[in-house]
Image (spheres, rainbow, N blue to C red):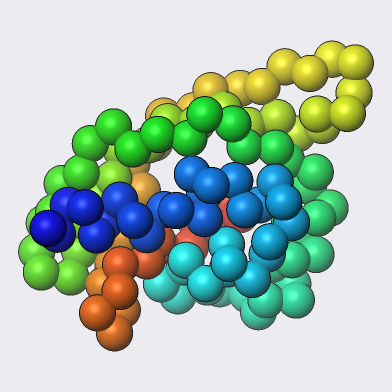
Length: 110
């Protein structure tokens, strides 16, 4: 059950809520955002990133409140350009349980 709950915390990413500019839903998936919602929304809008084919490949639960998810996804910085070249990334994302809900850790490069 814990593994399934960990996967669900990435629903805003897998559902591409960022592509739909649903900043509030994406922001709510973070355990401890380092910026406020207005700043995060502005940065996401300015980035013009598009996320594609998001998958959770592996889940490693390290304790009752911490896990790591191996994810892969494609991202393109400017999908409206004629040179649409998405880059596929594979990363380990830390997730933490906050008030009983699994959430992703804010990533330093965001």
